[in-house]
Image (cartoon, rainbow, N blue to C red; front, side, top):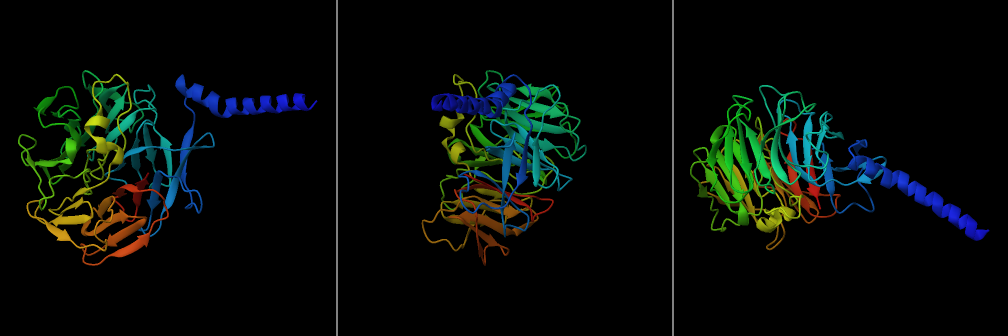
Length: 410
């Protein structure tokens, strides 16, 4: 009798597992969408996840974790980029590694995954860049890696439908970012991981190759006040700048730092962004795709799995750069640099840095579970304890409401 009851119990347990886990998984595999959502909950007091995304609505003074769920079960996302809508502080896009594009219409309090009607944007894609036109906010461009190929997608109806306007031949190579020029929603600049810098003036009907010999690119950004100024992060962590729209380049050398920056960050407001409204272009994970893909960003850019924001390029001439435990500042666009004094002791670990996009004097960085905050360009600092465990990998500040911040940990 006991054995019979045990068999019944095991049968019920297996049935529950099939319904809760296996059945939704099979539905997703064959193309049926399983509803997914997220909410902002209180900070955990016990088992905080080793990775996650956190939100502050008071300028970094307090933080709550965003918890994603699918069918009532916890779901963990790998965040590639966050893009703040250029004309609405409530609308935010989030690109993920392997989980497609997500959107919030509540300043990040809740999220839903974007699914277009023809499934051109796949739910398991890597979304590495988002750009929205200021002239026509219904126009959205995405830099996507899916089916082992880097592609550019465009929507003219807020993501209800997407069409492919460019793809990289050969496969295995991601597009690391894109930028919409402010004067036209049809003018677009894209950058590829294998050194391509391309521009279109007619929304992808034709393209002009500015360069194919820059070297392997990990991230790129454009100055919205001067689109001829382009900054890229290359293989090995070097930072290079062009002042003529990408025709010629020069490495940025900061007090003999050896150009060893492992990351890139741009905090200024702008119309469209390389990797996210000028707010972040860091890639936090290697590309997923075919194991036989000839291009392996994980090998070429080993820091992609350890990305952080290390270079801040404000829309003004102010620039910040971190190297190890040191922070540097330039007031002339990056020609001359001075050291910024912090409260960190020598050899301490400085993690991701950020800045208020509307006030270059307000800067932030994370270190050992603490947020260091300065409102006077680094003359004085305030230290705020962070509730999350793990290293803060990247910060984002909403240019439309600078009290709203996001932090990704791992």
